[in-house]
Amino acid sequence: MKVTDHIENAKGNPLFSFEILPPLKGQNVQSTFDNIDPLMEFKPPFIDVTYHREEYVFKQLENGLLKKQVVKKRPGTVGICAAIQNKYGIDAVPHILCGGFTKEDTENFLIDLDFLGIDNVMALRGDAVKSETYFKPEKDGHQFASELTSQIQNLNNGIYLDEELQNSSKTDFCIGVAGYPEKHMEAPSIDSDIHFLKKKIKNGATYIVTQMFFDNQKYFDFVDKCRLEGITVPIIPGLKPIATKKQLNLIPHRFKVDLPDDLIMGIVECKDNIAVRNVGIEWCINQSKELLKKGVPVLHYYSMGKSSNIHQIAKSVF
Ligand code: FAD
Image 1 (cartoon, protein in one colour):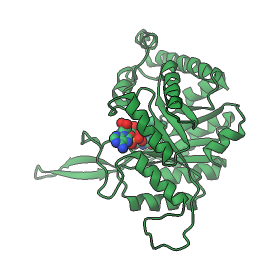
Image 2 (cartoon, helix red, strand yellow; image 1 turned 135 degrees about the horizontal axis):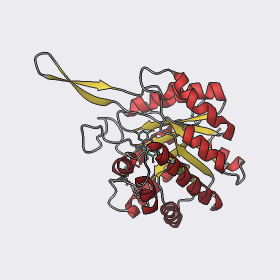
Image 3 (cartoon, rainbow, N blue to C red; image 1 turned 90 degrees about the vertical axis):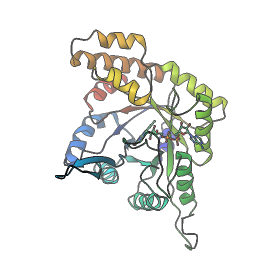
Image 4 (cartoon, rainbow, N blue to C red; image 1 turned 180 degrees about the vertical axis):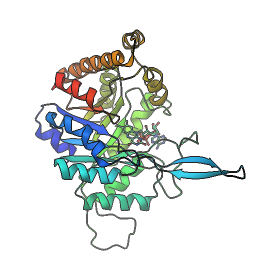
């Protein structure tokens, strides 16, 4: 079922959902199930599965020269989605990227998803590969998530890349896209970022999931701005509990989001990561409760492959 239908059917009752990563190459699918199993008691109607593009690594050869190798550390997004739908009978939402995909790759990926009975996709641009400063699309790929959204929507209308295809079947994907309460790191301003977010909706996206934030006011202001711009689709808040002291610097660096001073001080004063984890859980519970009071349709948690703190939060909130 579509994410938007889950929201509509819930009739205002807030839903619980979360995002998982496919296992690292070499791990088996059981490691993913072990993370999902404890969260099933909160009845998630859908689970997002991230997509991880290739990375370039340089290996030194015997003659001292460097050989560039392409590595995919977390393959298996589609397989994990199929496994989730099979085992739990709930909707899996694969993330799909512009990065690393030609339009032809995208079309074939979407055809596989359609054949597997997957009804939702999260359309994203992806980041630049680690060895590059700026995002570069494939030669025949998409530069922005709005273009990817258009291609998915075209397929929903039976329009394939090969215009000569006759009587082609229409897909019916529900398309989610990313939104940034503290603006995307490359956007020159929040207003321009929201302008391009609106383009993603115009091109066919029907819901937004936000980047993580730690100050609810940032989310409320973002929603207000989006509504003023005429964006009417559900805006699902994405939440991440801090779990280690290292994340105090890593999260702002990686995701370009601010942490409130009270949270920073709470973490700084912790003696070890067990204490940090508890501070992170408490903060996230408070954020979740306030968001629920304001009537958000879904609380979406970034599990980063570990579910035990999400379990503690959901137990207090749902
Ligand atoms: P876009 O919407 O294309 O925007 C990128 C930038 O370009 C923004 O600054 C925007 O303002 C600007 N822009 C957009 N259109 C135009 C235009 N026409 N002209 C000029 N500027 C424009 N990454 C992964 O690799 N795998 C994942 O599974 C994944 N999941 C994510 C899930 C969520 C909920 C979020 C919030 C992010 C996720 N990401 C993931 C990270 C995401 O890929 C990066 O944040 C990426 O840098 C931007 O993706 P986007 O889809 O928001 O890009």
